[in-house]
Length: 157
Image 1 (cartoon, rainbow, N blue to C red):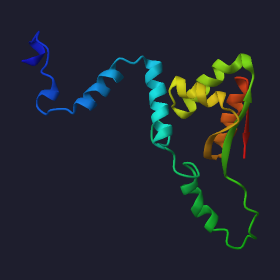
Image 2: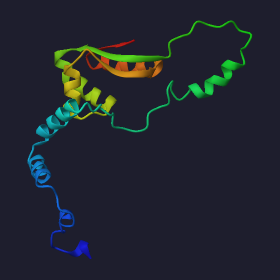
Image 3: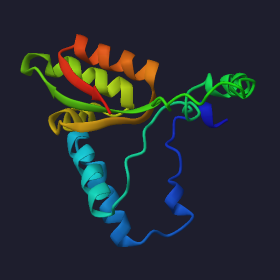
């Protein structure tokens, strides 16, 4: 009947004693603002060499969703001479952006990479920087066109 109770829930730390040093750090972190917390996270990532992990759904398999279905068709053409290898995966790089378009570029980068607003702003301000790696050609062209539409300059390598 906890949902009917008007009393506060018992603190989970009552069961296991907590190190006073840890308790002090936790209470200090609890008093930080959202911006200070974001700065703390980025500082800890830098100091502890923790890589940024994109937040989002499952990633597409390398080469895109259509490559597994296209492979058997290529095997049937054994008599055809080998064509020069065409690059299928590209690295996208944010080169620069117009000053007036900065908010739109930040919003677009936030959506593409699944970063927080603060991290997206830092990412955009550090241009030129690699945006995505190993992107299929069609998707890369769409992303470059979208970024160009909001006032950014992006390239495919």
